[in-house]
Length: 174
Image (cartoon, rainbow, N blue to C red; front, side, top):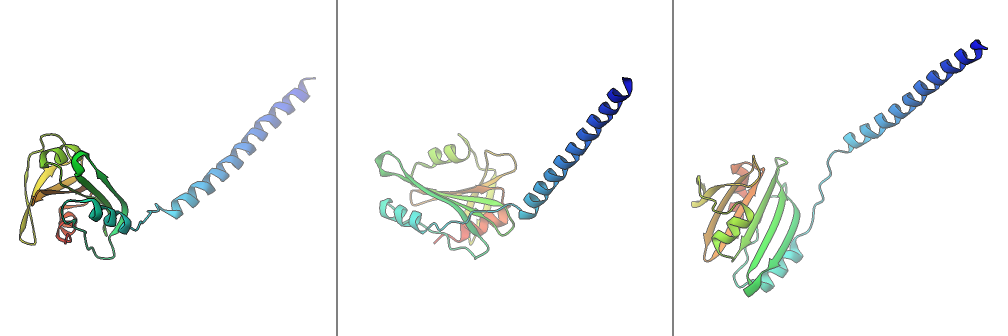
């Protein structure tokens, strides 16, 4: 009677190993396909957001005119009390980094507090096409930020992109 029990325990272990092997092969195939597919970026057309911002803003909205390697990934506008507008545009840069442009006629300290951090103080400047932008600390560790106010409108540009790419975005505003 001991012989059948021993044979059955060998079959159970063998079956378990075969089952695990099949599962690991399936998992390996799924992982390989996901890695080969890469990270897909959803590119959007922000023209409706620009049109909406222009229609509701009390100031001339500046739209970035960027080279084709810049890909828009998000666009929203939000009207606050008093009709003040905040336009947000997100981009994937040619270097594969993220940059966001925020354009708002809210008070400078309010928009900087919301987008970066309350009480953010300049840590230097970045000269873009002869115009000085303030370098500021960003909320997220490793991100960079620049800002300037012109005619009651504050422009904040921040993200994982380096200062040269943030400068390209700043210089593209027309």
